[in-house]
Length: 182
Image 1 (cartoon, rainbow, N blue to C red):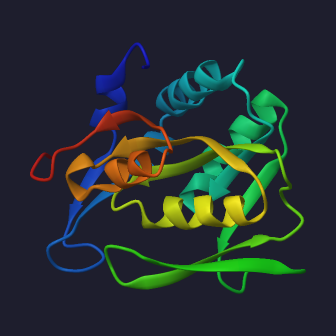
Image 2 (cartoon, one colour):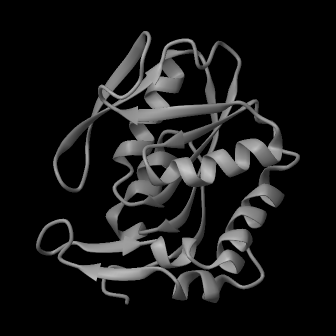
């Protein structure tokens, strides 16, 4: 856990009724606009995984790319992109999943991972877990195992962390928000 978790949390902006009524969106843009906070996030994650048994860093479209690229560079690991459908060239594997807003499809290039690889999955937020679960299924189809799924924010009341843990994937986040919390 970072030494200053409240400054990270205070820089995550609540946006009510986005992208649809009744949803409280957690916007990490203000955190990214603070060099000190963004460095704290990246350094905290790097310290957690610097000696971990991972061979690859997996980043989820799109805000996970921000964390994933920094961590892959810092840890000197290959970066695997999990993208929305139709965005990756070459041969891909796809996985349809449910989000809090509807259904979507995630894809990964079929030569990104292989048997025995150990993958750290990164996204900005764990909500229902749909995107991370889809990425995990894709990685498993390619023969890789998931070391852990990490994010800046966890919304535990939406059940994503629990769903991941139920299938044996550990989760880690730098901060959590209760549903009604601002």
